[in-house]
Length: 83
Image (cartoon, rainbow, N blue to C red; front, top):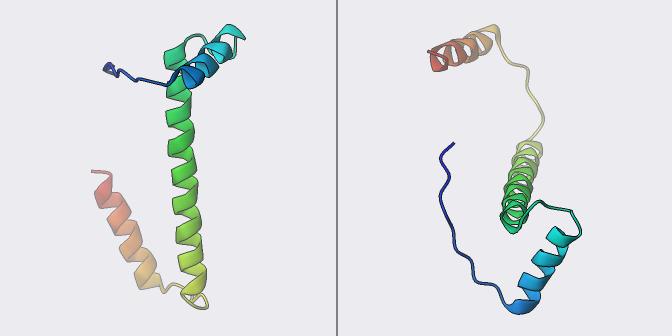
């Protein structure tokens, strides 16, 4: 994985908080703390999207069984996507 540099300016109270978390040994350095925040944000957004999709599915009405033809088409799409 290629890394790139990001420079972030924080007000002193926030920077002090980050430094304190590092000094307590919760993170090896300030960059690790920020990487963890980004990972958590991505996971939170993915969970929100999953909840939206579940709600959309529940609101779409009662379930209907798939036909054999629909199952076959789904399998074909999966097989062709892996190529």
